[in-house]
Length: 401
Image 1 (tube, rainbow, N blue to C red):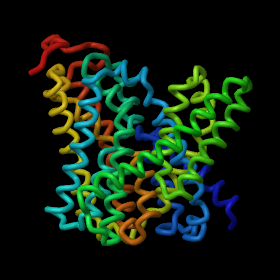
Image 2 (tube, rainbow, N blue to C red):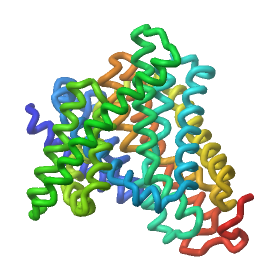
Image 3 (spheres, rainbow, N blue to C red):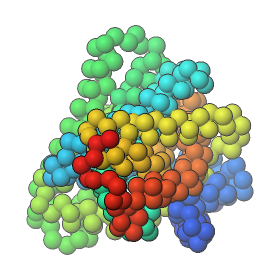
Image 4 (tube, rainbow, N blue to C red):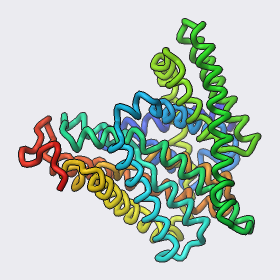
C-alpha cells in the first residue's frame, strides 16, 4: 500500500459511507466516521498506523480550511448584524459547556487539570451543519430559530480562542512551570496575539493581491497557497495554526471587497478534504481505549449538554431575549463535529499520551452527538412553535421571561 492508495480509500469509503448515512436519515459526517473506523487499524486494518501517520497532512489541511471558513464569519458587518445580544448568548453558552465539562473532569472523574482544561475547551464547540439541516427540513422561522442561526455562526471562533488559552495553560502545567497571574494571562495572550498578527498580515496581502486577479482558478491557487503557508509558518513558530488561519479568513472578509467570491472559490474545493479528514478521524479511533474512556465519554456528553443548555438559558435571560429562546435554544446547540474533531487531533499531536485518550473520547462522543443532535434540535424548534414558519402565538418577540 502507498499514500496514493491510502488517500483514495479515505475518499471512496468516506463518500460511500456518507451516502449510506444519508439514506438512513443520519448526517453524512456520522457515515464518514463509521467508515473510517471500519477501514482503520482497529477493525479491518486496511489503513495501517504507518499510513495514518503519513496522512497527517490531510488533518492539517482540513483544519486550516475549517479555521479559514470560521474567520470568514468574523467580520465587522456580521458582528454589527448579529448585535450584542447574540454575542453575549454565544459567549455564555460556549463558556457554559467549557466550565461544566472542565469542573466535571476535575471533581467527578478526578482527571488532571491539564486534561480537564483541554476537554473543557473542546466542549465549547458546536457543529452548525446538523442544526441547519433540521431548520431547513422543518422550514423553521421565529425568534428562537433566528437566534440559533446567529449563535452557531460565531460559536466556533469563541471556541478556537478558548482552546488557544487552554492549550497554552495545559502545556505550562505539564512542563511544571509555576503558574502566576502573569504567565496564566500574559503567556497565552502573547501566543494568541502573535498567531492573530501573522494571519492578519498574510490576509491583508491576499486582499491586496485578489484585486488584480479575475479568474476563479487563480484565486483558488492564491488563497490555498496563503492558507497552507500560514499553517506551516505557525507550526514553525510554535503558534496555533487554527488561530492564524482564522485571522487570515477574517482579514480577507473585512479588507477585500471580493471576500464573498474568495470564500465561494475555496468552498468549491474543500469537500474532498473534509471527507478524507472525517474518515481519517474515524480511522484513528483507538477502539482498545474505549473501555477506559467509556464512563468518561458518557460524562463528557452529559455535562457538555447540561452546560450548553444552562449557558444559553443564562445568556438569554441576561440579555432579555424572548422566553422561547431562554427555554429551548440550548437544545439546538447539542451537535458537535468538525471543529471538535480537529481540535482533538491537534491535542493528539501536541500532547502525546493523554492526547490519545482525549481524541478517542471526542471521536466516540461525536458519533453520539451526530445521532442525538438533530433530534434535540428538532425537539427544541418544535417546542418553540417555530416549525413550518409558524411562531408560537403565546410568545411575543420581546418577551423576556
